[in-house]
Image 1 (cartoon, rainbow, N blue to C red):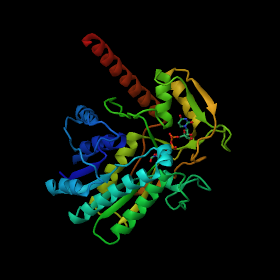
Image 2: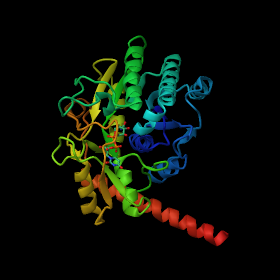
Image 3: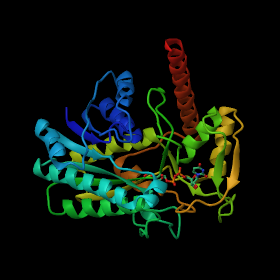
Image 4: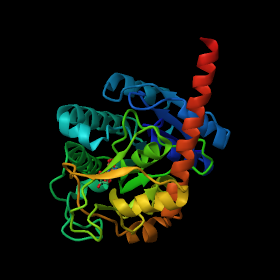
Length: 351
Ligand code: WQD
């Protein structure tokens, strides 16, 4: 049973990927300093899989602590590197924090991969590397333009670091460019837990619908799209997760054509913000309280993926549609509310 190290394993995509890896015969350890996540998400992973995953509470920006994890686990057969800050707006306000955290952690993990001769490395990249594309859908060959945010720049630089490092060592790597990951595991045992006010569209929708937020803003309806709101390729987090298992098996089975390949992970369908809101209202039966506001700085107007390469080369076949994404996201939000209400009632009884 091959052991995979998942950095950021307590995060949204990390935890869903750990479930998929475990269900496909891998052994997993997580490294996550929980600065942007909670370790109890791994309890949810255990409820789904029956497997308790160990998390090393380590800051990957500290080389010695990162190195110690590899010394304790000399049998690591592959690394999936999720750990990074990812709030586009925050990155605009604090660029150096983003460059230091996202790039130093990557450099340290790659140094350890080299030192301990870990053969396989999967990097969590993003469609933000394309910037504002001149034509859509984008393929992996679409020229990447100036990133719209420091977050996007860290993903562009991260891809260069991986690509140029593996050309000199034995590590075989894959760069996975996620489009917009949304939704929750159908078991409703794990899902997205935004810290503070959500920046992303779908948690903003579900938190508004459940009453955590009084109202949400649609950031602009004067874009050159079919209804004026931005267009994105929303992809279910479980489809994203399964692509990582397929990517690892692709490398393990030595089917890779080079030591650094790139894949788009999107459904190949674009939906506008207003269409997503409409889909949510139909699935949930809730009327969403939103208003049209001004544009958000750094927003890409329209992007969606050509995903033929991942389909044909990795055998990836995304199976969740927009309705599934809205349904699982809404179920998860309702569960979070139930747990919060139970906590409040218990707290009230004890005080
Ligand atoms: C989507 C659309 C907003 C909130 C994300 C991640 C990034 C990367 C790519 C992985 C935009 C609009 C949002 C709200 C709104 N993923 N919106 N009201 O900006 O495409 O980037 O996917 O690496 O990490 O951040 O996603 O969900 O923030 O925004 O109108 O309250 O929804 O303007 O048009 P984005 P998002």
